[in-house]
Amino acid sequence: MRADKHTAIGKFRKGYNCCQAVACAYCGELGIREEDVFKMTEGFGSGMGGLKDTCGAAVGMFLIISLASSAGDMEHPKATKADTYGRILAAAEEFKRRNRSLYCRELKTEEGSQPLACCMKCVEDAADILDKYFRRDS
Image 1 (cartoon, one colour):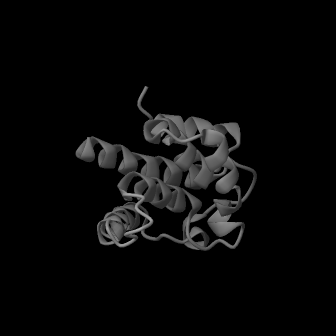
Image 2 (image 1 turned 135 degrees about the vertical axis):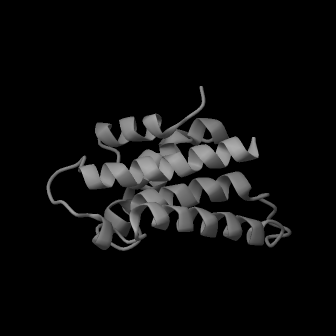
Image 3 (image 1 turned 120 degrees about the vertical axis):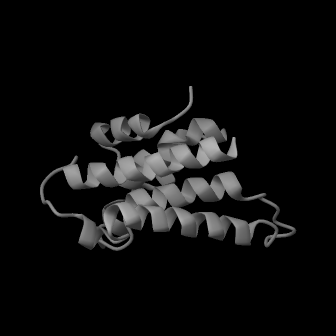
């Protein structure tokens, strides 16, 4: 089953942070263990560990693009780097177009326990951008 934005939203509603929800939704597509990605991204919610810096949903999106784009060639680390950076920049621009910012402190318009509607929108938008990315490249 292909992941989509509904998978990411479901994980966010379950209590995954915004980064976990987006990144973990695509583990099956990339053949990586969700448990590993869940642990790896635990500190990236709430704008990088509560710093309200780069939105965790956007960071999760960047992580998945990087995993999907990189050749993983450690002998030639620059082989796909420029292409990956270009893809991340394009995704960041789309995320900013939809949400006006990449920064949690500007995006989080509500307070309270998760899931917040403003955070849910960021998760949905990041996953929607990934859905389009995977359709384009498949």
